[in-house]
Amino acid sequence: MRRLIPIFLLIVIASSCKYEKLLKSRDYRLKYNKALEYYAEEDYMRAEGLFEQLKPVLKGTIQADTVFFYGAYCSYNQKEYLLAAHYFNDFKSAFSNSPFAEEAEYMSAYCMYLQTPRPTLDQTYTYQAISALSIYMARYPNSERTDQSIRIIKELRNKLVDKSYQNAKLYFELGNYKAAIVALNISLDDFPETKHREEIMYLILKSKFLLAENSIRIKKIERYQSTVDEYYSFSGEFPDSEYLKEATEMFDNSNSILKN
Image (cartoon, rainbow, N blue to C red; front, side, top):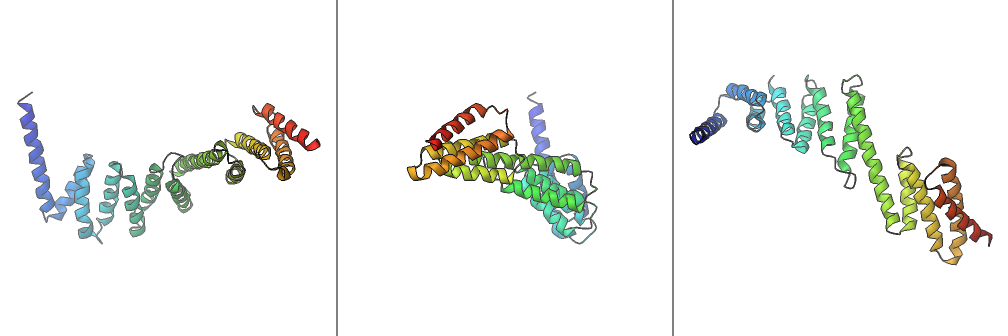
């Protein structure tokens, strides 16, 4: 085992020296072939180094689209998704007639999707990924990637739904009921089919009731009446809701105060 380690190190050093020599070479045909060889061997770092050197040299030749396309995939395979999205996007603009053009446009959108964060964080990349995938499907309506694109868009929209719901719910948890009513209603308007619809409507009702409870006398009647109206909307849509008992209690309290 001790004898094998020095031999292994010698092989690594020799391979590194060979690669350094290749980087300095002016034999661009050799560099092109070796870049593809490294790529096939999944040595993406070395392949990328050679592709980067070949880009300005082979620009305008028939090999140019291959160099730029596989260069972008080198970034993707090294999980540098934002950089890969940039390279794939540049590719589709520079090589619109290439046989790789459709795949590059999809991969640009897909890499953006891989950059999307969890719902609690900023969703800029989520919106960009949805837009890019939608444009891709419009441009290539018969693509074999259409079903996958639809699934991804659905997943991303659910992420936006969760983000909207969590942001609106936060106002309620902080006791800012006036802001909660506005934010929760906006969430429903933006995503009417949200999986959180029942809870959101319940939180709107409860926010209105608690806002009325904590209001000055002159505003109480109007706000209790709004609570009553909200109850009818909620109970009408969710007559078997787990929140119905508490919702009914808020309705009864509001009605009692209004009658008196």
